[in-house]
Amino acid sequence: MIDKIKQAFKELSDAVQEQASSFGESAKEKGYQVIDEWLQIFPKLELYKLEITSFSLGVAISPSLEVELVGKHEDFSQERLQQILTEIKGNTALSLVFNTIRTAYALHRKTHATLRDPLIVKIKIRISPEVRVFIGEPRIQ
Image (cartoon, rainbow, N blue to C red; front, side):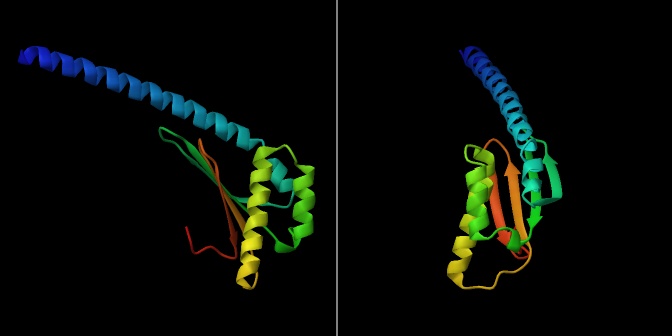
């Protein structure tokens, strides 16, 4: 009886390991696909005066890419951001970046704080991309 339980447990364990391995490969493949799509976006961001200052690749079950871009506040007035958003309409990735910049500026204006240089945009690419905007030198990591 105990041998049958041990055998059943071993078979279950083997099946779980196989599924986990399959899931890991699938996540890795999807992660690299998302990263590859974003690699096409960065040259376009540089056209809008966001310069890449840092580039990092993390390899794991789900790979990630982190890119930091720096710009000048004067290049991203409310009017200019609206113009950019009109130009890039339909491009989800670019819209995500510039909508996040616009929202960060709008929220910052509500604080009545002084704009501090530089404008920093950090993008973390993984299966679910994340865009963070810093106004001034970040102390928050």
